[in-house]
Amino acid sequence: MMKINYKIFTVLALTSLMFTSCDEGDAVVDDVTANTTRGAILRTVNVTSNELPIGVADGFFGVELEVQSEDDGNLIESIDVFAHFRDQTPDNGKGATTSDALVENISKSTFTIGEFGLPRFSYEVTLPTLLSATGVAEDDIDGGDQFRVRFELVLSDGRRFSFDQNSGTLTGSYFSSPFLYSATIVCPPTPPSTGDWTFDMIDAYGDTWNGAFLTVTLDGTEHIFAIDGGDADPTASVETLNVPVGSEVISIQFTSGPWDGEIGFTITAANGNVILSQEAYAATTPAPGVELINYCIKNF
Image (cartoon, rainbow, N blue to C red; front, side):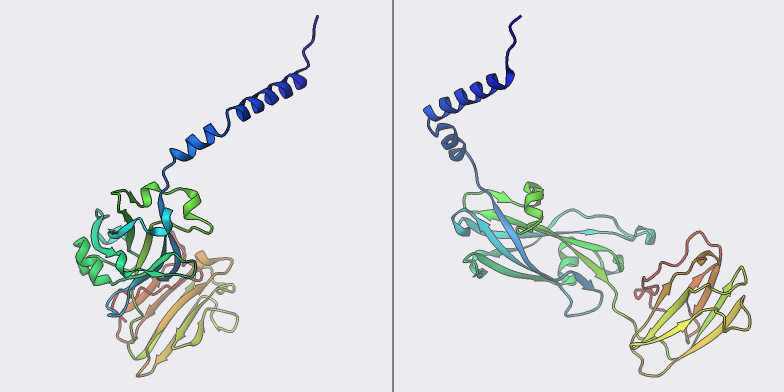
């Protein structure tokens, strides 16, 4: 029986195809090139601010962008800026995600030429402007909620390019062209009430906090609170921290130990308001390293 040497057959077939392609010239490549439509992108040069502080007049979302397209950006007519609101704290019973709303149109006349000879522009938008554009009331926002700011390139030939036309190639590496950015709403620190703050701490098992502790930072100075080997009672301890007049910022963080579930504490501000309360053997334990105070709750 005749055997076919498939390796030789494959080489001959590929060689034949190569010569056939060469005989046809660059017709296929020319056809693909001629029928390829080039788009346009906005490369992220720098995000100058991605937080929107509540009640801070000079707070803003800001980004510096570079326009890239065929003909070095000359096809760009303008840029539309859209925004929508995302409620990241639905437990407060407030609104959900809103639809995209036009914030403003940016004319190409405002562009400058960057270091690579391409058009660039810096964009800033404040929280009041975003609230007005999306129709969201200030009472309906909370720390952790977000506004999503989206840019849309408008070309002189009527084409538009934005987030929907993106791919992984554009959103990562050098291009970094997501067209869509998140601006998180934050609450600036509230000056604490002056006087003695009380830290009522327990350990349900009665063997101290096993290395866990609370770090209270008052105007940059750290104070450590815990039930440890130095306490007469390994089950409970009550301590105080005096907050003097003129104090500006207080923050509280938790450092974890091996038995966090046994830990309980109640922190009461000088004005009598309970700032934090953690029950022993609760379903959840304090998050290590995370700011425990919610600055949006004005009860300090």
